[in-house]
Length: 361
Image (cartoon, rainbow, N blue to C red; front, top):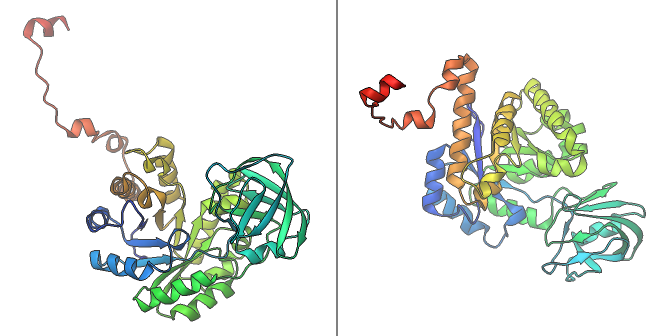
């Protein structure tokens, strides 16, 4: 099970890791569960993916729903909008350009209102809604820039969207039919969403409620009454909350989860530099350790293992940090922390200086 007495490592599978050898290495490195992210997966290939993973490992699979979130549709490479210009927001079936931005789900457009502010891809582009008509909207570009395909869109105020998309419902049905018993519920804002998913997956399944919106934070206590665990998604949460507030919110959420006795996991940018580099930055190592000290019961790797160049090394680093954390519970002496340097462990033999040089030294 994902939940255990020890800290958990949940690893997202993707192009960099969806092969038998890598999955075996990830399991050996300490992965306790494998995540399928439906935001970057299609339902048609889901049964094959699930069966393949099950054939490679006995570790559980966690299906992470896409959730009813607004995203851009298909945009050509390099498509950009200009500050001060007017653009049309249209349903996703239309291909975008410098004056038209398709959005999914299409029905979300009609739920916008004039003066609504919109942010695309973490403020890469910002818009102000001027007019909403039948099936499309008109907006002024406040901050110009490039608009990519499938980028996250945040609206203030946020329109109310259903808990599940049609894609989610198909994916959940498929996962349950193939024996998946762990589910991560994206954009969980109310306990009713947990209950909806419970009806779909059965009482024996484990549900992890993802806290990634202002409403989810506010309703954390009630959500915790019905979910089996929570997950702090720092990425999507930072779309709705000031970036400077995320560290303090993480501490507050984990503290409350610990007090309520519900397991809590943390995701997003844990070892982001390892998508390209073999080793993390010092800041990332510090962040992961502080996240554990904050009270996290598990850590979730996403891009690091799904599309990164060093998925196994990323898990090995998390496992190493977990060992350091577990050792710290009993207390370290300074000598413990200063010892065991990699160069010392290499046992490099050093020849003694010649006698006449030794005397000079």
